[in-house]
Each structure stands twice: as structure tokens, then as C-alpha cells.
Image (cartoon, rainbow, N blue to C red; front, side, top):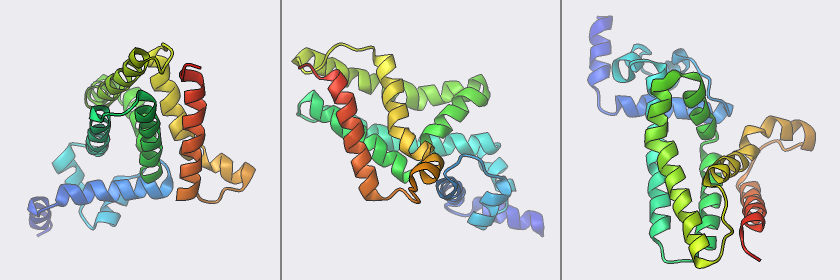
Length: 210
């Protein structure tokens, strides 16, 4: 009977989506990338064995989550690149968009680093293929546009990628320290906007030609 129930669950519509949504919710609530399959089962109301059925293992689930999140983010960046506006404005919107993404999904940048650095070459190659390389390419295009238009100094695109990614994630990654040192209990939308303005101003002050 149990086997029949699992088979029915596996064939039910949206089973994969429910597992992904449950894992996302857990990581967002905990502001962490660690969880157990039992946590996902309890949150989704599905058998934990379905993770193996649909994704192979927990890492497969994590890759599926990141790939979906990356697809949404990269589509937004691609649309931004196509817009007819100064490179400075594009880059400002891009950085503010990254911070908004991390506000909604505070686990995302840490998930990238965990899969790239802790889960072996195959996971690292997949993440690079569907997220890191396309994002770095889009950012390089923005920088090149700015240099060509005379708005930006020439900078190393690799340095830019790492510096901006870390800066955009810092408010969320180090929230426990902010809670202890500055008494920031929660990060709300107003704080997110203030932080986005701060990071954009900080980066552009080092990038824009005076």
C-alpha cells in the first residue's frame, strides 16, 4: 500500500514544484542553505523518497532550485541589456535588482557558492553553465557599453563580478551580525531600498568617469 501511495504521489501534477517550493521556503525562513529531506517532506506533505525519484538526490534538488531561480534572474538581465538607456542607469538597475533578488531569496548566492565549491566538479560545471557564465557575460557587456560611451573607466570584469556579487549579498548573508551589533531584528523592504542605494552609489563612485 505504501509503495502504491508513493507511486501515486510521484505521478501527481506539480509534485516537483511542491518539493522545490518547500525547500525554497525553508531556506528563506532559516536564511541558510542547510535542510534535511525530512524537512522538505514535512513542509510539502510529500514522501521524502520523491526527492530521489524526481531529482536523484538532495544536490539534484538544490541544482533544480538554483536553475529555476537563475532562469528568472537572467531573463531580467537580458531584458535590461536590450533597453535603450545609459550604461550607468542599466548598471544601477542591475545592482538594485540583484539586491531585490537576494531580499526575496536570501539563500541564492550562498547556494551558488556551496554547489560550486563543496559539491564536486559536475555540480560546479552545471552552475557555471546555467548561471555564473551567462551572468558574467551580461555584466561584461554592460561594462563594455559604459566604456564605449565614455561613462565608465575600464575595470577587470572578473573583479567587478566578485565585488558586486559579494556586496549585494552582504546585508543578507551577515544579518545575524547586524542583529547582534546594530540591533537589526529583520530586514524590511525600506532597508533593502536604502542598502541598494548605498551599494549603487559606492560602486558607481569607483566606476564612473569624473
